[in-house]
Image 1 (tube, rainbow, N blue to C red):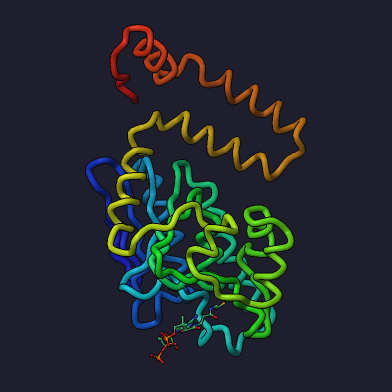
Image 2: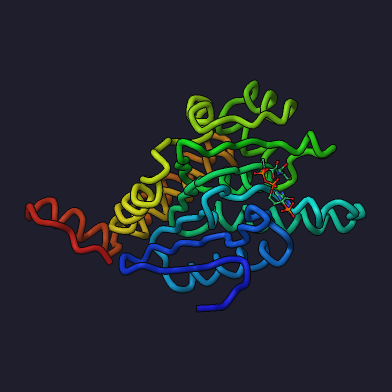
Length: 259
Ligand code: COA
């Protein structure tokens, strides 16, 4: 496993990868090195065949407190463009990771931190988490996908309110807005997310990956093209080990043995 300074990548025996942003003295804020390390780690987790991936932050206070404000302060427009492209690459890699990604939001998730969570498949927050697209109060706007992914998740009006006011909302409000799927007690977050990830890792991986691609596609194309894509993806699963095995196991009244 590669050795990064500000992130950790660990695998468990269920092939669940956990990627932890580990820069607690900066509340896990994302500088260039950290973003590049996340990009590397996502590639490594894919190569190693992760069946689910958990994304979280080190320490008790923060998931990720955003892009690194100290780094951004004096950026020129071309430098800011490069930083935006890097952040977008990382968010896209999370969104397209070939297995489900769960953001375990264990504290502050502001700006770029909120945007990484938005790119995940599922978001689970601890009851003391605080989230927001807070960029407006720094004189900027969301730059790593928030302006596009947030309205899809919470609707246009709420997204406008969150982005215009830079509101910092607690986990319960985030749940009411649909920004996070679940809120759990802080001391239960790790175990609960580990259970979810293990359940996903026990599903047929190729079908799960196909389901993720289809759901991603629903945001990218019109319905007609999406339905065509679904028909092809659905029929493409026939003849795979897991399709034959899943249906045989049902008919034989036994547990399936997935690939
Ligand atoms: N970039 C760089 N450094 C950051 C950071 C960020 N996004 N967020 C926090 N830090 C640093 C602080 O500067 C501080 O460094 P210091 O110890 O050298 O002073 C350290 O992390 C701890 O943060 P601090 O503000 O002292 O902790 P707090 O508990 O009082 O407040 C927050 C925590 C998250 C509420 C506050 O740090 C904050 O509002 N951060 C900025 C969030 C933001 O706007 N993010 C969007 C960026 S696009």
